Image (cartoon, rainbow, N blue to C red):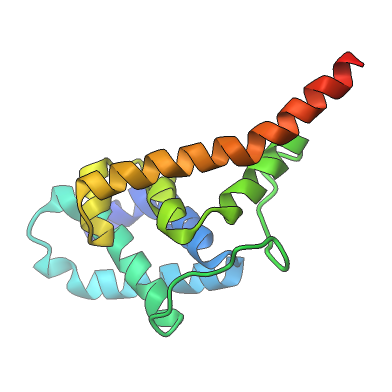
Length: 162
């Protein structure tokens, strides 16, 4: 598979992941562009073409951290965050808010699983931890999302019955 083919297959997922990391369209585009440039330069050294997807995601993650000056991602509120309008319903907005409220240590593995379709083992390799730690973080992320979303949904259901 050529570099162009690899990019064509994964470009949308790379941008979605960069957008999730940066929470800004322009910055996400810049991160992906820089990551693809680095990937293009390093592509001849890629030993396993089957690892191309996780390799590109790693480059995007590293490029994002490089752009931040190696500081961890930290936006925890919706203030000033430009979110794409895929769904305008109340639940969709609550879900976005809940995802942004998750600590980065829980949200990043969840984003890699949902946006990138990575397995726990692949996520562990990408973020430099163990597979067990990834599974724990994913479980805790889902539990936190349930706690953040359930109270709002329960209040709405009570209001409909009244």
